[in-house]
Image (cartoon, rainbow, N blue to C red; front, side, top):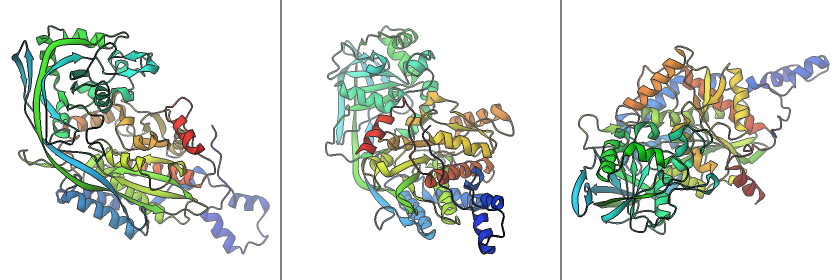
Length: 567
């Protein structure tokens, strides 16, 4: 541990008492020492400055049908970013980007019309995968149309090249013009072997984004990920909802840089049929893929498909505001959360709006509630507080990626931060789950503040989901900024772990990335407010302490941070 403690400052109670006494010598030394002592952990909590009523109003508004699912580059975005900026301005927060509350994020939006995937053997079509129930396809290449024509299929296991783990799923194969067939997640999860990768905890190599990027680096023309609910951590319906309709990406100079022609998912039923058609046993090949020394295998099949794109380019917006600090105003603690969701899908019967109430009106409302609590605090923090609402998280963390690559405030002067994504609405918990547990000294401060609430911090209950790589803190972490991503754990004060786990499973199965993720007046927000108070306390301590927050030894971001600070 290298965290240093607070510089002694007066608490509000002490300031008032000293003023009333005229600072004379009538107080004894022990009494005066008590009044001028450094603040205790309890002094960092916001108390009644966090209003559940106003928090509810923010969530209710952001998740309303009027905001149309908050899709980037849509009328829903215009309403959303205007609402957030208006709240920031009404609180008296300074604009976060010069004289503006907005940072433009140049996005290209592509809506694909896709043809089915046809699988051929010896020139004959033996399997057809329909778009929607069987497969989804898209391209990240900014082009009017793209196709695969009889592209050879190669099973490349988990599609990983990781020298530090002694692993290369592409060893000895020329992928030029071919299509990679790839398992989801990574070998550690598949085997539950704690000595393989990180065991049950997903590494970045298990993320679908990495798999498509690696296939492109290998020269592949296409990439197919085989969906399974448990290792993916979401059902096929989430794949359908997330990768159909308008898809966004950042505008780049090279419109085809680093992408295969066609990226896709196929359902596990189609995957099993595909392997059977290749004369392979799906279960046996899956087991082999998780074994060190796996050798990629030509499947003796080809894939053909095509799509056309409707393309538009428009700026989306990150929304940012600053509460200036006092003594260390040129250093920043950041609160982040994404304001966007999936918008509307006119092709759906019934409810067509993905309201995104939990994901992530809760986190955006948290930003606004914390901003209000800090602006109403009796004393301002030593360091500045940045409130950052980012766009296009659902499209691949694009808004936070843009900020990480184009920071308004120097990354080396950004001391650390807390990200809020899909806050709990299931009541108070005994524990606080840290996503990516064991990362930085922010966890030590979190632990100290959680003790005040009579809570304990624990590792996330489902590390196999790769949550650390799936929200916006990751794009700040990978440029070196220590970031904390935590939320209520599953050990509820009413019902225990069984109740908490059941509620999470129910949400993922029935509402996650579905139109049914809507605000309810029945939500129990006592735990939500407790989490926000905890995040406030962590930020308040960091914003007033001397010294830096450091990554723990052995984390992949420590060297990046040290290099950033050295420059």
